[in-house]
Image (tube, rainbow, N blue to C red):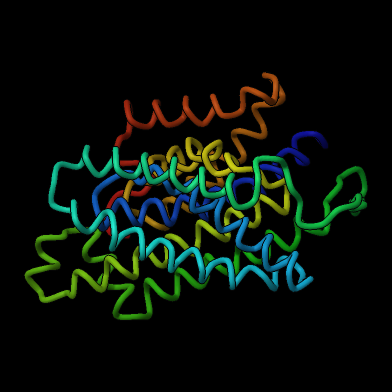
Length: 286
């Protein structure tokens, strides 16, 4: 029983990281109608932006987080204006291939600038807190709190601001939203900015929990897509729920299968969802 509780704690931690990535991915899909394959590499480059701030200015990771989120948001907007905007009206498969090429370019840039070896934000061993038989690293508590704060901020943005409501309207019914006079270009720019910023946050938290390497985002892309599909494509709240479910399922699966096969659990959940409930857990208005 103790092992199950410990795995659930680890699962919620992983789920928090997946949820941040999935919210950005589902917002991009909801507004722009294509699966963005470079989303995992936005996570990676955001994590490396934070590493640069930590190394150069000798700041704690959480102090570098806003800088990394801002830089990644600007990068996402720039890529959209340079690459995706020009081919937005072509077939979705062209956008899909373009996002895959963008992912390869971003990964190559990371390897050229920061190198291909593993790196960490802080060297040394971090002693875990012991709560009875359970263990929790101090960084885990910071990740929980920061991820919850960001999710709450996204909730306020989507429900309390005109741009957030316009974004939800475009995700629900783009044609109807455009007829009502919603500024589509501004919504798209905000979507990329929020998606990029959340991806950077997810990458920084993943780097705090493990280590940084150029393919760190790519390896997490499948669970992020699984969380997006499980929660309902285009549904930010569903992506949060989907991320937590996928994270817990991946960690609990280690009770019966080797940990190396955890990504296969996310793939199985994704396929099962597509076969039996393609609309995801949450159906209806976001």
